[in-house]
Length: 336
Image (tube, rainbow, N blue to C red; front, side, top):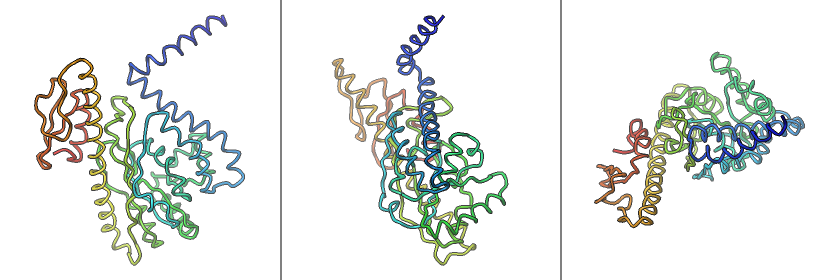
């Protein structure tokens, strides 16, 4: 019986590389299993250490030290711009767009730069133990999104502490994660907090995940993400009457940055796809294809030309990738 179980186990292990390479659905779930599994394992290890200084936001530095390597394991690379804004020793409200739980991996990658930073998270995550318990001991702030008044009371209770201890508070003002290629309307909580304590808003923008992540189709490939920390926006002298204007200003500057950084990622993705095809074509003695971002002629049947009428350029896409790339166009007019 033991031998039979061992043989089955060996067969499953031997099939893993095959399934990983041939099934994007298996690869999607396998990568998320690695992600959540390592975070949970590290939570168990770190909980005893966190007990020595419970609810201290500096505990998150320990967590990020253990967890930031997950990105490398699942093929994600984060490119941070505007580092100088995040490393300032100041209290601020960081507002960021929210596309996936993968955002947390991007935060792990730069937590050592932010130093004293904590996060506003939905209350349900607290009950996802061991992660929830470890997160609470690391100083995360859990709010009840269903009960708006209770959520505001929780945020008000920590607002003064944030200013006095020069803590950065990370908030996802869209509320719910959406990988749709656009920024959605913001909730007011973070902006109320900034005005109440007269501390700056620091926008952080993750470029679109559309080139490597599709939750509906269960696709999670390797990918590059540009993370842009923008200059802080002061709230000194602002009152509640200025709330809507502040939200509109922050939303506009983040949307503009999102479009620019996502366009750059999209162009890199197209260039990489084309270069791979060119190498394959050259090795089989077929004609070399036209480069990306130049007028393309004589493009092979397995490519699609897409003309940017504004920039006056043509981008060549692999036909197999083109449909997923167009998700961005529908939402953001990144491609005209």
